[in-house]
Image 1: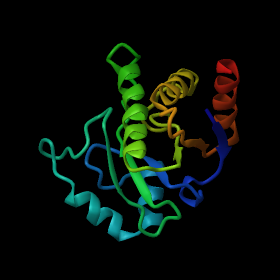
Image 2: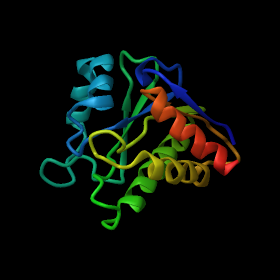
Image 3: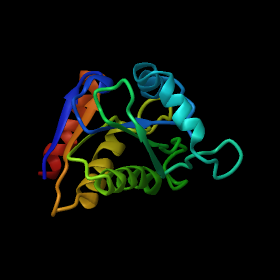
Image 4: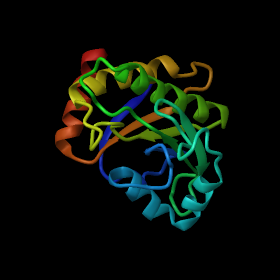
Length: 174
């Protein structure tokens, strides 16, 4: 299975889908979420508003994923997933983070995609320690991979410091 760690702007990657580290409303926010919404244009926000709420104000609960077109992005699709807010690790955060990766991969496979790029989900304002998130996310991606139709998987880190953490975790698993 092929996983690469890259540094850069996820909105500029030439992949079939990029994963958005979204909030539960799916109506945009800061960090990678805001960058994806800005790059995709207003049609992405309109598409997200069309997604049904599962409860008031929640279109996608933590650990789940939804898919929309990519609009003005190079990527054909955006897979929105909501990572857990770090509260010390004993409130289900590892299971929720694993679920984000697994469900995003399931959507990519169901849509016949060949390439996907993930950000470091929950490692920004949600406070998940990247040294703990990286190995867990990489294991989850490997477990979710379809061996009959393998995806090219990229993890796109905004900074070189974050990319070093992810590369180290990837090396430790090889």
